[in-house]
Image 1 (cartoon, rainbow, N blue to C red):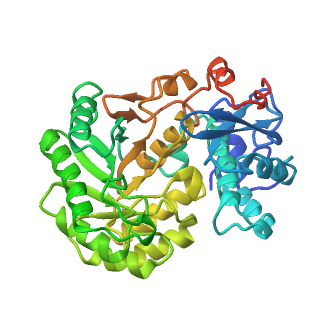
Image 2 (image 1 turned 30 degrees about the vertical axis):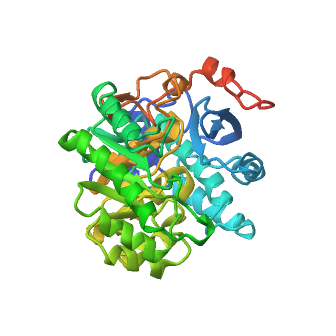
Length: 412
């Protein structure tokens, strides 16, 4: 056994394995121990975007910070403030341990699903950014390396007349030709003007024809220039969802998303089994424990977790691993700022079965200004090679778009 190898396994040796690794990469060279980094604070700032984005920043005594994002939801900043004392003084490199620690400590508030999971996810994303900076590696490397250098982005599209098939077709062509996207999504839970009672979830024949008209108009307009998915936002009954899925089978639909409410998995499975139209769901299920049921029952053709909602980067990776055992691809739902969008990109790079990451803010002119780096180009995000997430908040833009009453992060 070589002396170097022996030293790494000797608790009395001058360097531990992690210390030697950190020294090799020149990290915190002025500190006595390269692993001796402690969390000193966690702060949040909420941004008034097209959704209220909750940005999270983790501070350390090494002067290095990590930035994350939690899914929007009432009470998330307060939950993060409550959790802060639970990990003050902890080592930010122990991401898995800290995640499980918060899950356990906050179990009384509910850590199977809901805003507590979302709040923990915001911290977890920030820890990946922070650990990557400490170790001087991009976040995807912390997840096992990468399968691809760029992540495909699908653009969630809207018009002033979402229910007008021709307006949708015109917008689809504009987004493809002018903005450079080759993957799109449109809503189908729009009013046809024929509804009698939307509360009963039943689609009348004329309503189905109206939705088919939207699918046909968009699909025929873009043809092979773009893949197009359609979102139902959990609106329809099982029978209506089956009839709608059947009616659009002849079109090249990328997927039909959330056609039925999320609570009853048996109905979801029945709809998926009834059609060759690909069915996607998963946005409203938390952590791998809930997503696993969708996957193992093969109730979806495509699973669609939302990273800052479902539990964070490693939890999304776990979901993708289970999905991969059933040969199910992953299309990440995403309504986030550039922070969680890039976090999803790192996860997408690190899993074999990634299809795309959603982009929901193309109508918001300052979305990309929140960070100093360019994010989306020609419908793709190049996977950052800089340490951590590889994006830097532009504090002037953050300050300009904070929710009223919010406070800007402390400087490092």
